[in-house]
Length: 193
Image 1 (tube, rainbow, N blue to C red):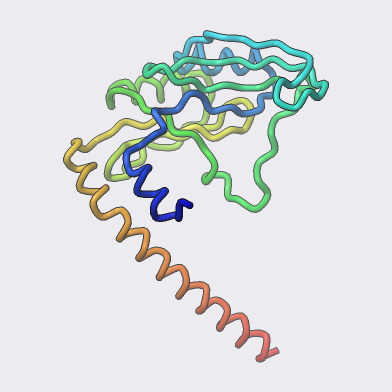
Image 2: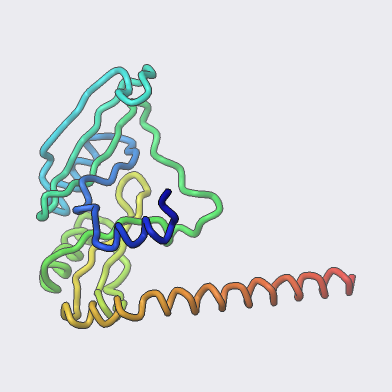
């Protein structure tokens, strides 16, 4: 029987080859096509239109649209025909859930920023994240998108990878201390009332 450690060792090399697609609900397929194809430059390459969901068999007429990225992966959307967008997560800040799409240069990032702003899209950034520079905006469905360009070398990324587990372990420890402090403060406040 495989233990988590032995499974982890067996999978030490990445077995997932890459992203095939990321899917999200959209309010209107044509509005979404215009945004992703005409403004961002991702070509619409595939449309699936069905009345029944293949995985569950339930009746739900929909169209599933796919936009291809330069590496052959896709961002995809479902239009369920009811003009409703996916709701944001009520317990999560709007900046947390997003997809980051990589572009090839800072010049390309700035050109896309200008194109989006010219189309009336509010764009935040350029934000420097030390390994990438990014801009952020919401698509017509309220879905947050980041366009990003890498600003460090492969060796810099390997250096970050070497300390990633230690950095995460430090966060786990610090988080436990923060939670313990918050609990202590809450208890002290409650006792003071």
